[in-house]
Length: 243
Image 1 (cartoon, rainbow, N blue to C red):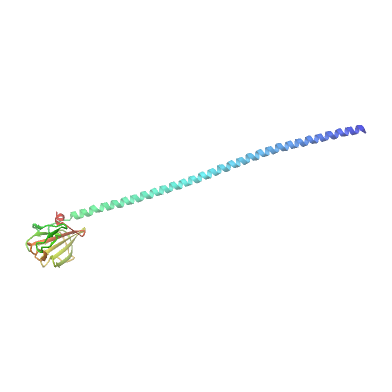
Image 2 (cartoon, rainbow, N blue to C red):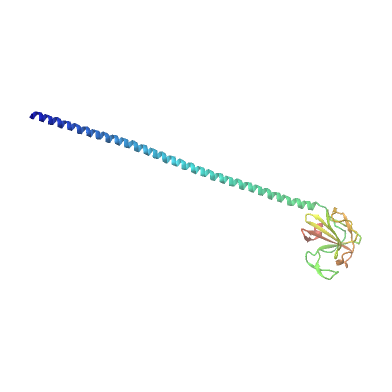
């Protein structure tokens, strides 16, 4: 009985020792497996994180690229619009510049003639006051007085349209003609029985009437034609217009 118990105790101790070894081995294996699982999981998560960061950077770069394209397009559109406006403005300015010389050439191309032949006995005063030999009053003389015999033909200085045929209280029988391009002329101190009527078209040299003595304001002067020229509603020296 005594030997049996000792052998049984040894077997039991040996059995328990094997159990502990097996448990320790199992724990070691579980630890190793857990470590490998943790390492793989960590690598996977880091890979996914790197992929997410790369994707985010790609998206941001793409957005920046789009914004740059839009800005470039907007700048290009603005530049094109300005260029178009500049061309339109330049074209309009060129057209306006071209028109003015044409009008000037048209005026200069018209023939001009003196309405009568004779000496100028009273000049254009250009706004200055001069003393009238008839009234003794200081006043402006807005035309020129051309000496001519009574009955001498009075001619239109250039082509135009008759706008008035009248008997003025001071200047007697008068004919006013619109010669175009802002120029009009008034032929005064004529005789009764004028050769044109209001609305008639005349040419350079067309006879309007004859020199008379109907202008009471200059009745003390020798026989003459009082001749006035206006340019854009301002009196101008007829001699400069006629040359």
